[in-house]
Image 1 (cartoon, helix red, strand yellow):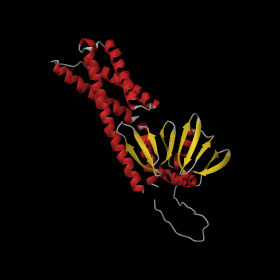
Image 2 (tube, helix red, strand yellow):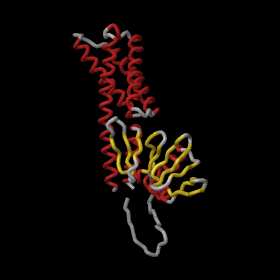
Image 3 (cartoon, one colour):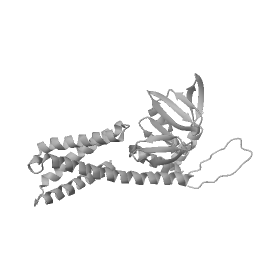
Image 4 (tube, one colour):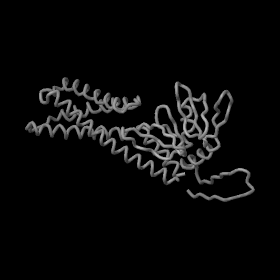
Length: 128
Length: 149
C-alpha cells in the first residue's frame, strides 16, 4: 500500500513537471490548482489500470506495454474532455505528453527492478 | 539467536531442540521451518502414488487446472491446487513467481533480466522459469527470512 501511494505521487510529480515544461514552452504564466488534483485523480486511475493489466500476465511484453499505453491514452482523452484540457493543449500534444510520462515511469520502474534483481542475487550468493 | 551444532554419531536422525525464553515470532518462524523440512507432498506418476519430500521439489506449476511438481529428475501430478500448495509451503522457502508457478528458493541459482524487460529465474539444474516482476518483492522477502534463520 505504501509503495502504491509513493508510486502514484511520483507519477503525479512527473506529470506536473512535464506539464509545467510544456506550459513554459507555450509561454504560460500559471498552472491552475485544480489541475494538480485532476492530474492526481487521473494518475490514480491509470496506475490502478496498469496494475490490473500487469496481473493478467500477457506473455508478449510489447502487447502488454501497448495495452497499458492505449488504456492510459484513452483515460487521458476522456478526462481531457471532462476537465476541458483541450482548451490549453491539443490532442496530439496531450497524447505525446501521456506517452512521455509513461515512458519516464517505465524507465524508473526498470531501474527499480534492476536494483531488486541485484539484491535477490546477492541474497542467493550469500546463502551459497 | 545463537546456533549450536553438535555432531553425535549415536543419533539415527538429526534432532533439533529450540530453547527459548518466550515464544516470539522468530522462534515460531524457526520451528515452522524445521517442521517443514520433513514434509512430503502426495503426488501421482504413471498412476502410482508417491510421497515427494518438499526439499526435493524444484518448482510447482499449474497447467490446464492440473498441478505438476518438478524435482531434479521427475515430474509428478498432484491433486492439490497451486493456492493450497502456496499456503502449505509458504514457511518452507517456496514462493510464487508468476500466476502459475511456485519455486523453491533453495533451488534458485539466480534471477536474470532479459532484454525484452522479462525476468527469468535460473534454477540449480539450469532450468529457466519466467518470473513476473510483481513477485520480486515476495522472492526477496522469502530469501531475507531464510537467510535470517
